[in-house]
Image 1: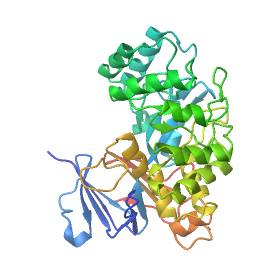
Image 2: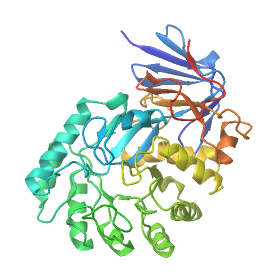
Image 3: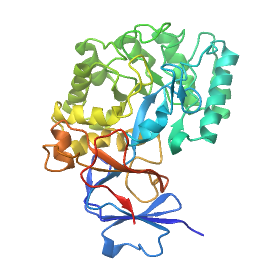
Image 4: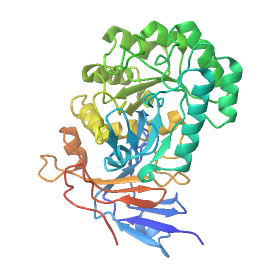
Length: 387
């Protein structure tokens, strides 16, 4: 028997799609964890719902996607000796995470057999277990010298679909990285490259020349993780290739704003995706994606509804995910928000444009309510509720 969820009384529906970031609809119908219909209440089939969520005139958006995290196993990070960090991100509206490498595992193996075993194990573990319901796409090996094409073929056949940040291991030269990135791409494995100064012991400077020669699918933390390249090199990266421009919370804010403005100036906003690059030395940032949205909209002077697309639909398309957009057939992952209490903004979008964070009142993953009022955001003025 089909399981049906209806979200009604939506005041503002953000689509995640740059082409039309706001939808003229007030109701979403979900069947078996996927979006079945989006439209006006009188024109959709909302009868027979097992559960109904009343949005109370507030905002519904696709669940946020963090394009750059470093998980280990379960909901624990040894980087900051912290438990339940993924659950905290859920309370910040994040429903999907992409691993850029399980680099913080104590004693992480760097021999080729060991790194492949770790990647396969992480991929299996997070496929079998979703901490707090969050979808963690993990199993991202950090490439090392001596790997050959057969290694990438084996990884792909074992279910690995990501490479950890190129540059965090022993492979730091452009030509060597280019060959391995090409092998990964041949077998359907997506790659990300470290950009900027060293982030952890063992990593090193990766400048624009190396990034361009390696030609990875994602220019990882183009604003540095933490130390950014000169702005002239960031412009060069934006102008000289068409790869994803990833801006992260744990990076240089000036450089992040510059990268966004450059991509917008080039007429390529679809390249911009957002991440936190956490856990890291800076800690864990449960509201990191929301803070990036607020920063880029307010100081970057880009409409909030557009910046929400950077953290949802843009990332979904770049990462080939089935979520991130409010359209039939997509996974039913949503964050329900309203303007924070006592913000100067007249509505949610205005409050974000003014630099405030929204208040999260509910997060839904695959049609299942995973949390109600967020314990981490400021309180929303109006809370959605299960009717």
